[in-house]
Image (cartoon, rainbow, N blue to C red):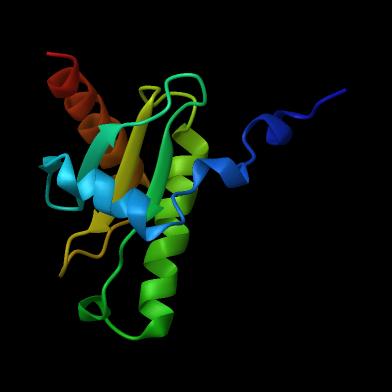
Length: 122
């Protein structure tokens, strides 16, 4: 018996962890942004699903503020991982000066990732 929460766990394979993965996504030069978020995308592994990495620089503030932004971004991805287009590798970068809520980030992530998926399929 699986609980509904189990289906929304964030599996370890969903995270981009190596610098070479980040470099590959940046090198694809496919990006979209809004007032809350900047998202870079590259074609990933079609069978596994969408993966993501975070890039939160010191320009966003002290460690507490950066940690909060990372937690919000991870949660936004976790909740919507099944609604996002599959087969992409994403790097999520919060916009400087914005103080986003979880709802703002969820809305931005879904819209921008769909926009990038459509652009990459052309």
